[in-house]
Length: 277
Image (tube, rainbow, N blue to C red):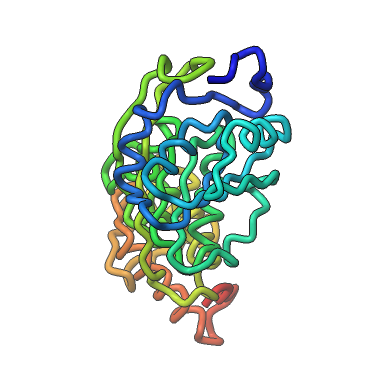
């Protein structure tokens, strides 16, 4: 085993909190079921998860932003099934992933939401994905209507994947220990419920609905469409004007999106907004 003195320093600015041992990865690896398959690992760091994936028979492409840790991983894991690439997961071309690939990673808290969102938007033939993220963020990914964590992220994740909470880890599972708890999430993608060309408009509608969580949808959407039009859209979608966004499931937001597109298809409607229809 390599001496800790020969390892690169962890950089606080990059949010590097490395797992202490491969046994801690079991919920993620079990969900991913990587035997014989290809896995893209984001942020491998010292290679704890990498080793666990290789031990299960996976072929791993590890993408590491920190050049020192990328070089370290190449040195300590000279496995022919492992390729290490220096790069930023936020700029990866996820649409170019081969069919059937799995994606995993212990993600820096500050960019976890952006990475997972970009993956779900871009990857067309993703088999499944599993990540270790901050517990608060994990709860938002998997939240259901009525939960205090339920928000735009919950709706937009549900539109593209089934999200599950796989397990939790305390700060002591990491070096250095973070100040918050963490959790594993598993994502099983499914086809988007709308044509891809309509998804950006749908996303903007959902974000508008959750802009003011304490307000009714009549008021939240009224700020964008005007009160009368907002009431008309809600009625067409079968949603009470007094409902709040956190009470509405994915199907309700899809109905609201369709109502918006149909309403603004009429040239007589002032201020028409058919963006993304």
